[in-house]
Length: 180
Image (cartoon, rainbow, N blue to C red; front, side, top):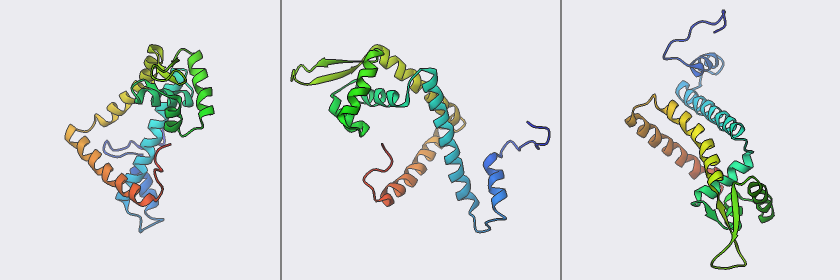
């Protein structure tokens, strides 16, 4: 803490000070809404930083992690066309990603047993371990932060955020603006 800073109350956070600064400027500002939205934004930024650091720690580029993640989400095997669809990429872009991941030993491509003209992409043990390691970093941070809540509070928070997201998804108008 810098010498000029006053100690913060145990129950106060940065957002409380932010809201207090803005209330005189915008008297109609709802401090509860501003506080909730600002906290969600700051948590999102925090989790993004943790995720990005985990990628550095595991020597993964973001696109490599994304590809491993989509492959893992399909049980560790997929056709390149399925990955292209999941990643919202052109098939040629996925081929380039798979070439690089295969060179690193994270995936292997084998002929399909059902149709020898097709290829199946498989997550290797090394690829799975690397993906899980990067995932665990973020998972531990999520557990650490949400660990300040009781199990019942976590359920309530999840339920409330679901209602907010449902309203955002319903009003968005686009097919699925939240995933990409």
